[in-house]
Image: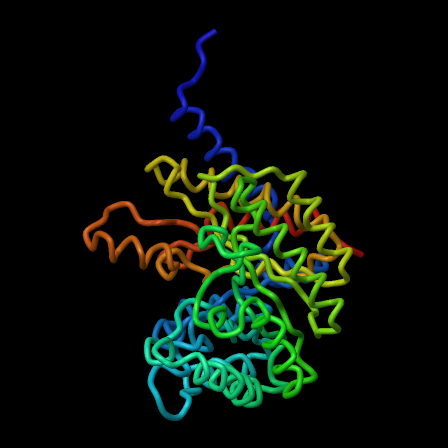
Length: 364
């Protein structure tokens, strides 16, 4: 018997994905947020400033998102990019858009050891400590009670830095040691007692030394924060799926259950599928992206603590992977396709895969 080549096999998969998509949604199509909500989940997306310039893209948010995460508008580099008064205009504009469209907004992110402006990095340790406290007081105070949730600390771990406990190095770690995490939550809680506080982390999907180390560090940190009485309502797992690294669904599910035992909700906060290891052929690549995303969601949505899935932007042309590819080669012919909509705002196989995953995990 003659077996099909890899390319032929993937073309067959692509065709079957398209066929199953149309069969599953022969009725009038709903927004992805509506499908998720009907099955007991919240779906949303991060939004950058481009939504105010690209009207058709903005319309995707009102049609498909039930929550919006700030992309760059609330990062320290945006709010405090220069000395002087804080710049809240971009985040305020996005908050107004969300309010006008009855969409809750998530803040991302308050404290992160990356993307800290150089003028802050150049401060003395004492100056950075004072700035840290004052920044939290002012920024959290500005948005107190107006957000669904805040990523108070983002990506506290990076084993590659070889710090004790696997922590990510940076200006806040240098100033306080690992205690900066607890300090950030306690300080924020003095100002805002209504918003859900989230600990957001990357790389946990990887079933290799890096991913397993981050999982272990994260579980230990959650224990420490909970034991200290720190207000921590949810853990965000970014969900930037990277097929170049191993992923074991069963072991990842065990990790999710271990998190849930710590009495925190779980949000998938930055979902997309990196496709640089997949073939160039678009139909084949889209099929593999959809299959990767659906398998992941089929695992995580079975865990009752998982409440929310947020895509990191909605359309391929606004993915941070696309930005990176264009910076590397402005004439690149192959561009990333990690999201549920393409550059023409059309649904891709990943959209249908996500919809099926929400439907298959229906909660009463």
